Amino acid sequence: MTNKATVGKYSDRQEQLLIESLEADGTVFKSRLTPARKKQIEAIAQATINGEREKITLRIPRSDLSRIKSKALQEGMPYQTLINSILHKAVN
Image 1 (cartoon, one colour):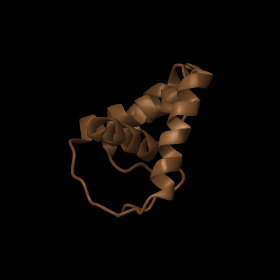
Image 2: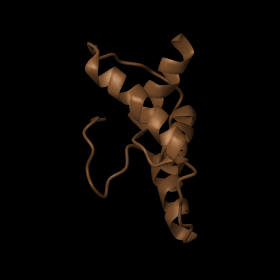
Image 3: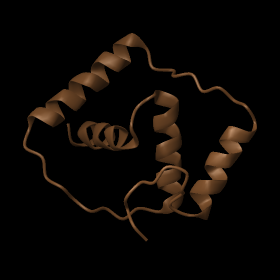
Image 4: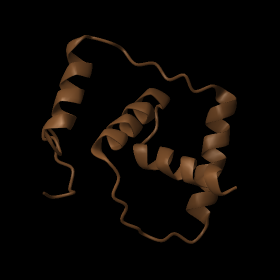
């Protein structure tokens, strides 16, 4: 399986079912991100961007990744940014 994103393709059947179910019911997702929380996340992201970065490979259960992606969608941010934010909070 390739890690390269392709429009209209899904990484696996579970992702396809999740996305199709979200799109099928017509739910419109609104970010629950307050301006203060957005500013906090942006500061964390900026600190992360400005620091030296190291690429890692991390294997996590698909169900956890699906939940992270869903949460990131609700928060209006890329899931990688959410993961970075979670890690940053955990170590500080």
